[in-house]
Image 1 (tube, helix red, strand yellow):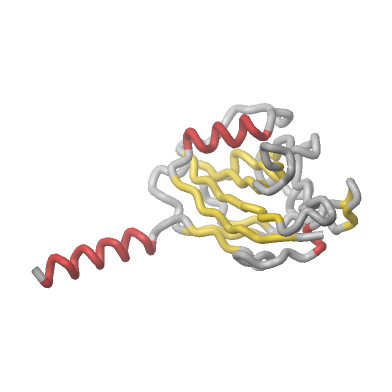
Image 2 (cartoon, helix red, strand yellow; image 1 turned 180 degrees about the vertical axis):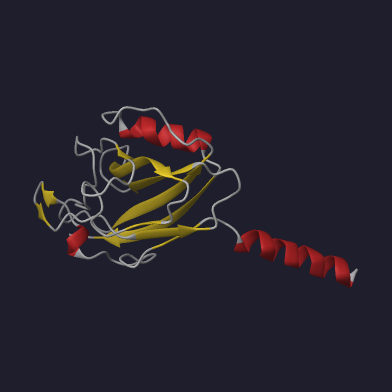
Length: 175
C-alpha cells in the first residue's frame, strides 16, 4: 500500500512539472505593473510597451501559440481585451519587451482599443485595482485563419474552444 501511494504522488508531481508555464522578466504574479506598460491615450500617459513573456513545457501536439491580455475588472460588463496575438510558431518560446508592432511575432488582431497590437493597461482613475491576465495558449493548428480586425471576443471564444493547454500570469495596475 505504501508503494501505491508513493507512485500516485510521483505521478501527480510528474504531471504537474510538465504543465505549460508562463513567466516574465517584466511582470510578476499578483504584483503591480510598471507605468511603461500603461497605455498612452484615453487619459493614460504610459509607455505602452508590451511586456516580455516566456513559456515552456508546451504539450505534445502543439502546432502554434497565441497570447492574450485581458482585464476582467474593466467596468464594461464584458472586460477589456488589451492584446491578442495568433499564429505564433510552435518553436517560439518568448517575446521581447516592446515586440508588439515592431517584430513579426504572429498575427496581432484588434483589441478593445479598436486596432491591432498591444494596448497597455489603463484602468479608470479611482476604479481600484485591476487584474491583467496574460495568457499563453497552446494550439493544435499551425494557423488560425481569422482576419486582423476580428472582434477580440471571437478570438477569445476560438482559443477557449480549441486550446490544448494554457497558462496565465496575472499582474495588477491601479490609477
